[in-house]
Length: 307
Image (cartoon, rainbow, N blue to C red; front, side, top):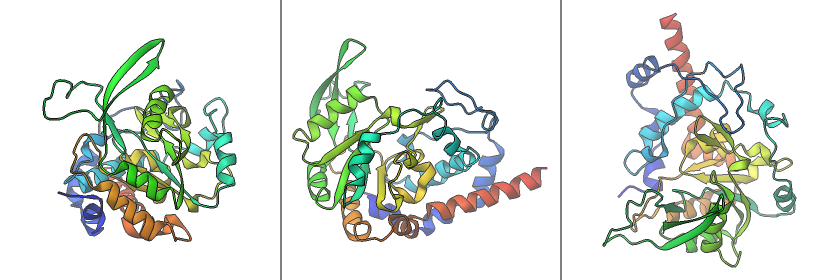
């Protein structure tokens, strides 16, 4: 079974994707306008960007490097967007987490942000396993949504409690989820009922939404030095604007033999915790920025050939 360290142990696997495959994929991009759905805003500078989101369900064991290649190819389009302008425009972005920022400024530990869905847990909203006799939910969670009580079965990723307990010794841990608050709080209150490990929470409102993807731009943490911040997520789009702050973990659904949290924990303890700059460690280990640069150069070459 492939795990986190297997996936990233050889950067060459990512960087040596066949150029011809990337070129063919590039040429076949259909026209699709990019828009900021939740804010009902379409900015002129991004309205003509070709963009097809890659679903994080493609990020599974054995397909990690293909997912990275496909997603970074799409992320290269997003580099044309001036996200800083969006964050600095109160009519477009209003949800700076000021209370959480105050907490983090007083923290002497590095900051560990954790995604929720398909990173720490999986919620079976499609009821795929509701009648399954061999695969049982770890918990049925209930929460309120528009005056209606919703119940959903969830699976907890193997090793989560150990992961949180051990890493809380070295990091200030927060959840940064693209989910809505009521649902996310119900999950977090279950996995950390006494608030021993998770010290703050960021939600969908704190993300930037584009074409059904959620970007967790870390610049919302105003005044926090991003050299001390790391985000673990199963979607590369989440840290698209700060690739060197991200750790990409395979998507989780129900596999009780999954060991990825243990692998990430070891990486965080052995490499990240003592780093002067988390971004430099991740840059050397994952090479996401290097691969993105390669894709950008190839795109430029393709455009020159086609023009």
